[in-house]
Length: 129
Image (cartoon, rainbow, N blue to C red; front, side, top):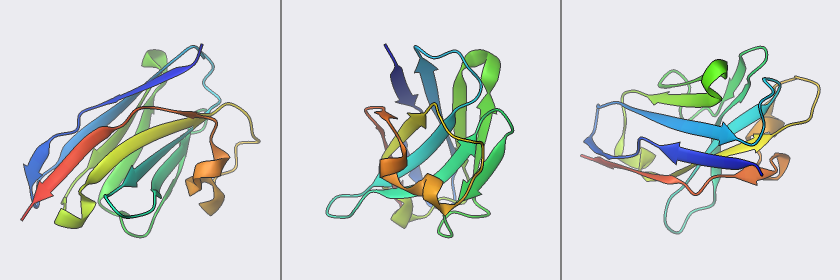
Protein backbone atom coordinates (compact mmCIF):
# COMPACT_ATOMS: atom_id res chain seq x y z
CA UNK A 1 0.00 0.00 0.00
CA UNK A 2 1.48 3.31 -1.10
CA UNK A 3 1.47 6.12 1.41
CA UNK A 4 2.85 9.67 1.28
CA UNK A 5 3.35 11.67 4.46
CA UNK A 6 4.30 15.34 4.45
CA UNK A 7 5.80 17.19 7.38
CA UNK A 8 7.65 20.39 8.17
CA UNK A 9 4.91 22.95 7.76
CA UNK A 10 4.88 25.82 10.24
CA UNK A 11 4.18 29.51 10.73
CA UNK A 12 7.08 31.78 9.80
CA UNK A 13 7.68 35.43 9.07
CA UNK A 14 8.25 36.75 5.58
CA UNK A 15 11.82 36.21 4.46
CA UNK A 16 12.14 33.05 6.50
CA UNK A 17 12.78 29.47 5.41
CA UNK A 18 11.19 26.08 5.85
CA UNK A 19 12.00 22.58 4.67
CA UNK A 20 9.12 20.26 3.91
CA UNK A 21 9.55 16.50 3.76
CA UNK A 22 7.60 13.89 1.84
CA UNK A 23 8.18 10.30 2.92
CA UNK A 24 7.04 7.63 0.47
CA UNK A 25 6.26 4.13 1.69
CA UNK A 26 4.98 1.11 -0.20
CA UNK A 27 7.28 1.72 -3.19
CA UNK A 28 11.04 1.29 -2.89
CA UNK A 29 12.14 2.12 -6.44
CA UNK A 30 14.13 5.26 -7.12
CA UNK A 31 12.44 5.88 -10.48
CA UNK A 32 9.53 7.99 -9.40
CA UNK A 33 8.11 11.41 -9.98
CA UNK A 34 7.33 13.51 -6.93
CA UNK A 35 5.40 16.72 -7.29
CA UNK A 36 4.84 19.43 -4.72
CA UNK A 37 1.56 21.30 -4.87
CA UNK A 38 -0.09 23.97 -2.79
CA UNK A 39 -3.60 25.20 -2.31
CA UNK A 40 -4.67 28.36 -0.56
CA UNK A 41 -8.26 28.91 0.58
CA UNK A 42 -10.47 29.86 -2.34
CA UNK A 43 -7.74 29.16 -4.90
CA UNK A 44 -6.98 26.30 -7.25
CA UNK A 45 -4.30 23.77 -6.48
CA UNK A 46 -0.97 24.92 -7.95
CA UNK A 47 2.01 22.78 -8.83
CA UNK A 48 5.20 24.41 -7.57
CA UNK A 49 7.96 21.82 -8.08
CA UNK A 50 8.54 18.39 -9.52
CA UNK A 51 11.42 15.94 -9.50
CA UNK A 52 12.30 12.68 -11.21
CA UNK A 53 14.19 11.06 -8.38
CA UNK A 54 16.33 8.63 -10.40
CA UNK A 55 18.09 11.46 -12.25
CA UNK A 56 17.44 14.34 -9.89
CA UNK A 57 15.97 16.38 -12.74
CA UNK A 58 13.66 19.14 -11.55
CA UNK A 59 11.05 21.61 -12.75
CA UNK A 60 9.69 24.68 -10.98
CA UNK A 61 6.79 27.05 -11.32
CA UNK A 62 7.83 30.61 -12.13
CA UNK A 63 6.32 31.77 -8.85
CA UNK A 64 8.92 29.85 -6.82
CA UNK A 65 11.89 29.60 -9.15
CA UNK A 66 15.06 30.70 -7.42
CA UNK A 67 13.49 30.44 -3.96
CA UNK A 68 12.39 26.78 -3.69
CA UNK A 69 14.56 23.71 -4.21
CA UNK A 70 13.34 20.12 -4.47
CA UNK A 71 15.77 17.31 -3.75
CA UNK A 72 15.66 13.55 -3.10
CA UNK A 73 17.14 11.39 -0.40
CA UNK A 74 16.63 8.10 -2.17
CA UNK A 75 17.91 5.77 0.60
CA UNK A 76 15.31 7.35 2.92
CA UNK A 77 12.55 7.36 0.26
CA UNK A 78 12.13 11.03 1.06
CA UNK A 79 11.87 14.15 -1.07
CA UNK A 80 12.47 17.60 0.40
CA UNK A 81 11.17 21.00 -0.58
CA UNK A 82 13.49 23.70 0.71
CA UNK A 83 11.65 27.02 0.73
CA UNK A 84 13.64 30.23 1.17
CA UNK A 85 12.71 33.90 1.06
CA UNK A 86 9.15 33.02 1.91
CA UNK A 87 6.41 35.50 1.10
CA UNK A 88 2.87 35.88 2.50
CA UNK A 89 1.54 34.66 -0.84
CA UNK A 90 3.28 31.33 -0.22
CA UNK A 91 0.74 30.65 2.53
CA UNK A 92 -1.12 27.44 1.66
CA UNK A 93 -1.57 23.79 2.40
CA UNK A 94 1.31 21.96 0.73
CA UNK A 95 0.90 18.47 -0.69
CA UNK A 96 3.25 15.99 -2.24
CA UNK A 97 2.15 13.56 -4.93
CA UNK A 98 3.77 10.55 -6.58
CA UNK A 99 3.76 8.75 -9.89
CA UNK A 100 5.70 5.52 -10.48
CA UNK A 101 5.66 5.38 -14.27
CA UNK A 102 7.01 7.51 -17.07
CA UNK A 103 10.14 7.93 -19.17
CA UNK A 104 12.05 10.28 -16.95
CA UNK A 105 11.44 13.52 -18.80
CA UNK A 106 10.60 16.61 -16.79
CA UNK A 107 8.44 19.41 -18.19
CA UNK A 108 5.55 21.68 -17.24
CA UNK A 109 3.18 18.72 -17.44
CA UNK A 110 4.78 17.33 -14.31
CA UNK A 111 3.29 20.28 -12.42
CA UNK A 112 -0.24 19.19 -13.31
CA UNK A 113 -2.23 17.46 -10.59
CA UNK A 114 -3.67 14.86 -12.98
CA UNK A 115 -0.15 13.57 -13.76
CA UNK A 116 0.00 12.01 -10.31
CA UNK A 117 -1.58 8.93 -8.82
CA UNK A 118 -0.91 9.11 -5.09
CA UNK A 119 -1.30 12.03 -2.71
CA UNK A 120 -0.42 12.89 0.83
CA UNK A 121 -2.65 14.65 3.35
CA UNK A 122 -0.78 17.94 3.32
CA UNK A 123 1.12 20.19 5.70
CA UNK A 124 0.21 23.83 6.41
CA UNK A 125 2.59 26.68 5.70
CA UNK A 126 1.69 30.15 6.95
CA UNK A 127 3.85 33.17 6.18
CA UNK A 128 3.13 36.40 8.01
CA UNK A 129 4.23 39.85 6.91
